[in-house]
Length: 349
Image (tube, rainbow, N blue to C red; front, side):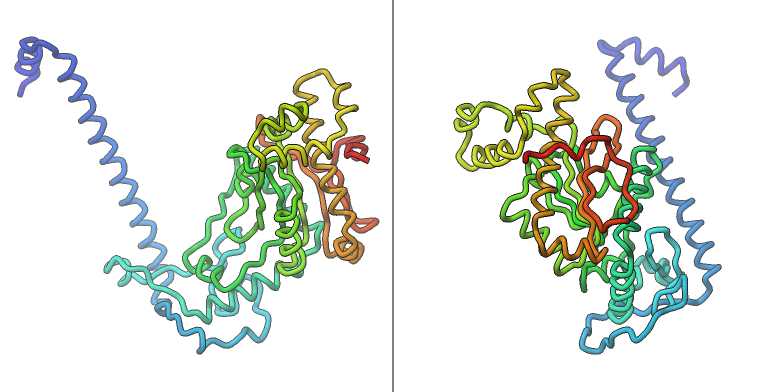
């Protein structure tokens, strides 16, 4: 139809705005489809170029015969995994790309269980060889990337995910709050298998959460334990209500809130009248009390004194994205993370 014919048809209808809306929607949908198609074509073009550079290096198909696998017998050259996979990402991952024939068929080639096993063993070796100070510094760097808007979002390849089936080797255990606004892996810009995360309302240290931390420390050999509270924590606010009000809640919830309340120094908190400052210091007080409880575990302190473990408190500010560390428990003489002056005085005696 010509523009004049289209205009005459529209003007003869009772509700021309409906037709115009439908036309606009159709045009927008067509533009979106075209944009996605162009993006896919560019992706395929770049991938084909990469494959041409790689030549005929085609990986074996994934097999599940673990009984045929043998353990890795020694270290590998820098930049390569034990099986010779090339390092192509900053998240310590080793990847291979599928062959041109595979792409043409639409199927991704896999990797042997031996390669996955070797990669897992190398990752575990690297994790165990890192010092707590180094691990904590990397955690700070990850948070800095997050709040600066330069997060790397380290995703794992199919091969790396396969290697995680065999074992996990996180370097950090985090006791955090279950609040939906505090996704720990995102806040620290970490990927699959990097953090052992325990989330519970008010990041409370209870039988189950403490047992989970002990598993991470004694069996997974994590180097850093972080107890992290956050801005605007509803559990901490509720724990500051009077006991009669708290006891009106369901039994389990009331018990949890009273447990948090017992660790707050409410006498000192009543002296803070600015709402935001009061909120922050209440959360810090709760975290400091939990760090203090962990430091009373002699088995943990033995690891701390051997420079095999660091325990530290943290406060996540939702509004800025910044994690502030404080109350660090580490071997004497080790570097300290920048903390808040005077914060160590918090925590119920």
